[in-house]
Length: 216
Image (cartoon, rainbow, N blue to C red; front, side):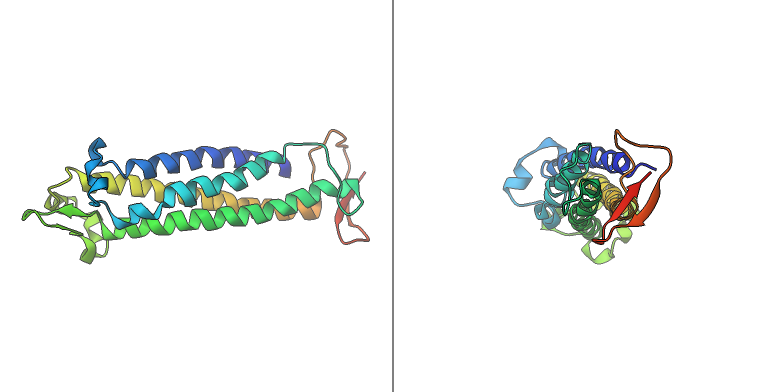
């Protein structure tokens, strides 16, 4: 397996998932395409946590671009050893992956809380409240109760769909970043196998300065 190609693939995937998270979070502000509910502060409190915009979106772009940047084949060297530079880059990508794990974890947690609490909506008496807050998320299994929310129309379906999307995308991002942690560690220890000077046989040994190197 080529550790560099794996990292770049993860990076490109994270960019698309980050964009989708941002779009899903923005849509939460406009139930049925209307802006008045946001201006009147009649949205779910968890919409204002910006979990998709920040956690699963902008914060995810940092590790994504770091992973994509591993595409550069030239190596500036590390600790005086050119052949160890790429392995240092792979190890440094682990730090970026940890940032991605934090961002995606935040997205997942907020989305899950938003689903559990339900939307802020107007009931049959015209009062705005969290109608399903005390159901502990059980309302998700009983769509017949969703009609208790009279305004905005179809707000339960709107919230459930978009928060579920954020939950799923955040979970995928979390798995991808966790995969890169493993990939980066393996790439740093056992060597960066993708280079223009790749040869048939490799032997992995430990450098005298503590870094792993690969020679033919």
